[in-house]
Image 1 (cartoon, rainbow, N blue to C red):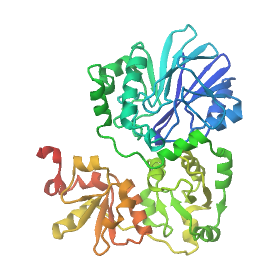
Image 2 (image 1 turned 135 degrees about the horizontal axis):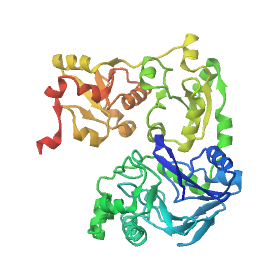
Image 3 (image 1 turned 90 degrees about the horizontal axis):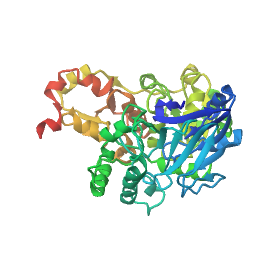
Image 4 (image 1 turned 180 degrees about the vertical axis):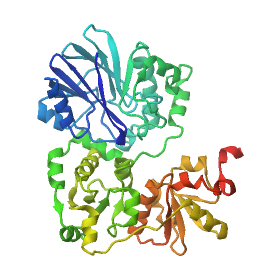
Length: 471
């Protein structure tokens, strides 16, 4: 049996495609559905079903557009209540795709409607299981997301449901099943996912902490809930879009594909409710950018940081990109529900610069230059990495303000003295710098290469601390 995993690294997402005898099915599709349609067309197949493992929080699914364009039936598991036509499967219900059989296994825990799909080949031999966010490689789905949409669904309640779903529905299955999860490392839907994107179920039974048979229910709940960080703020909004419906991506893209001259761009950018989002690489942005724009580079975890740093999912956005990257930026925004791009700067930043319009920049220094400064004077260093990264190792006396907390902790950034910003490699600190610039700060310097370069200097010997070595 052939199962094709279609993996999108920037959001650590896996969709799945199967085809048999002219019929196909897609599991957990992304917003841009044409590649799935093209894949089926190439096989001479008709997409019969769009299976959803649950109402996703970290991306907007393509189920509605895919069903509309192909006539496929959308399938959810028990208890799902979407605001559109869908088949709500019963537990153990079977579906045929050509000679293949798909069995729905209701596995509440990540969410109430979470459902896995057991895949069997033409001989009725079980081949694999599409697990959604119920079971990852090395982890299981966090149980604290649904409470941000329905308060009664507490993380404790869902964790206990997940304990029983795993033990009653997943672990009794054969060891030679292939596990096909919805996410890999980098997703915020779990806390310790492997970089591997598939595995044998038998190996997961041996190595995945959540499948340890020696864990009591209370021990499982404690292990699952320990170390959870706050989910990104856009998660509940994406859940609602997936439940309630949304505009077709075609409509979103038509609105976004508006090339603007610098004059037109400037006129719209000056409107009170418009955000200028520059998606160029951090180093290029730092050298010159349109005043009051913020930088979130396409070359990093773009969608996640857009969701973290732009709180209003209906924010009107003007794009500045590298020429030729406009469409990619629009699509990647739409994947996480940011559907209100209203145009882009034709010709990119160079077109703006060539007109003589005002520009800004972020001062940057090398790690070696920082080393010299710190041997001569005391200077405030603000580290915008995650708390866990900071606690693992950091410069002595550095202040930790994680990127996703910047907007709520602006008062902690000094205005009356210079300070230095850094992250791990320079991507996040330039996002932070662009936000600070937009809010009126101009007294900081960014470290090129971030902590990765700082560690190569003598500062590692004189000012480096790793708390774990002090225990």
